[in-house]
Length: 135
Image (cartoon, rainbow, N blue to C red; front, side, top):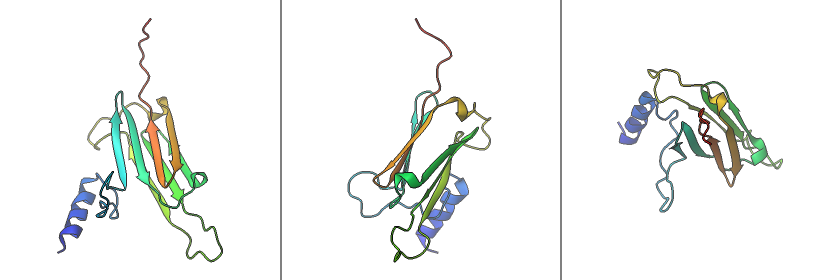
């Protein structure tokens, strides 16, 4: 069996990556090689970026619920000679690292912002506000 296929299957089983099309780009010399990046922020915040080549900012939806942020992006056919129905990118970010972890507080208590430009969707889940006030 091909080692690449074996690696993709093991990634799928762990649940860390949700699809078979998430391999690092072999020709990128500088910058990030993967199709996505996630960086934890202090206070349960998260910065997440995913490549969505060809998608305009108006064709992106980001929805948050109690414990996940979902995104949907679609490449619309701009010209009548474009073939097919366009590409669709979708996914979600969960607020807990594994299914055995206790459910964290709702994401809805945090601000969720996003921006899509130059083929990259950037999502920021702001850190939770402190309940203590300092004066």
